[in-house]
Amino acid sequence: MRHWDFPRSSASVQILLELAAAHGLDPARCLEGTRLTPALLADPALTLEAGEELQVARHVQQQLGENSCPGLQAGLRYHLSSYGIWGFALLSSQTLRSAIELGLGTIELTFAFCRISAEPDGRDLRLIIDADDLPADMQRFMIERELAAIQTIQRELFASPLPMAQIELTFAEDQRRACYAEVLGEQLRFGGRRNTTVIPGSLLDLPLPQANPVTASFCMKQCRLLLQQRRARTGVAGQVRDQLLREPGRIPAMQEVAVSLHHSLRSLHRHLAAEGTSFRTLVDEVRVTLAEELLGTHHLSVMQVAERLGYAEPASFLHAFRRWKGMTPSQWQTQAHADAGTKFRHLR
Image 1 (cartoon, rainbow, N blue to C red):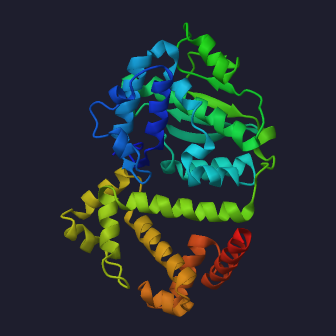
Image 2 (spheres, rainbow, N blue to C red):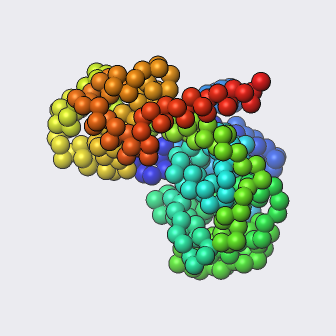
Image 3 (cartoon, rainbow, N blue to C red):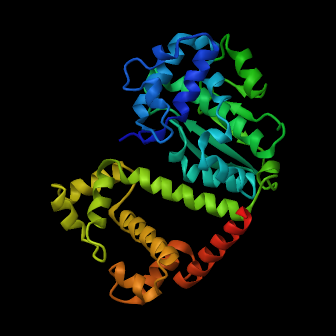
């Protein structure tokens, strides 16, 4: 399974179709070869496979022509509001640094096809955009789109223009340089080893104008929930989660799950590793999700929650919960109820 092959909302396809329409193109042509129709895309709850969006992007690129830098044009249209709850989570973050950490940790809630990672560069932070896992004909489009979208998101987080970043591109310099400079700035270096953009250290820890700890906490919880729901529906990991949730109060051993799914232990290990997870991680995810639900909404005692999660001793649950959340179940329960009360007071 490729790292970009995760379910996503239809908002990105809508953006691509709007770009096509703005150039006088027939959006219906961009949907050829997919199951998608304008009527289907009108459903806000629609979830797409990554391959469907990739096919639409391919059609858009073919119709606009590569020399028009279609990826850059597309990326400028990806505003924070395009990403739903993920965008609001970034907007309410305390600093740009915390927004980047949150964003990269929940990248599957975006429309990214490139692998995006961060590394320190002195006081600065360098974002690396890797498209090697994509079909060759779509790599440049998606690198362009990610870079332009990153610029757009940073400007909207600060609600003001920002100094243009230093950008390194693996492409050779050609007639498209003027297009790149207009969108990304003049600090461009072509023919580099990697595709990267540098975020100045002076920006990383500045407070964001719309920072709100209560909103950020709420949005982050919603992001985690949405991420779990999407992951739960896909691949071998989804099948394992189904097995783990089949009998509340009893977590089956990996050998038992492997037999149920007609895998050997080695095969199950290999499949889960290919999907970027492990059996231990999935068990923790299931238990922490259930623990949060039981502690936050069912008014159960810590001992009762430990029993429902299959722990023989409450002490084992306490130790695990501290590892997951950095606090005791009682502390988390108190904080969750306080956050909920604050949220509702804001709505009055």
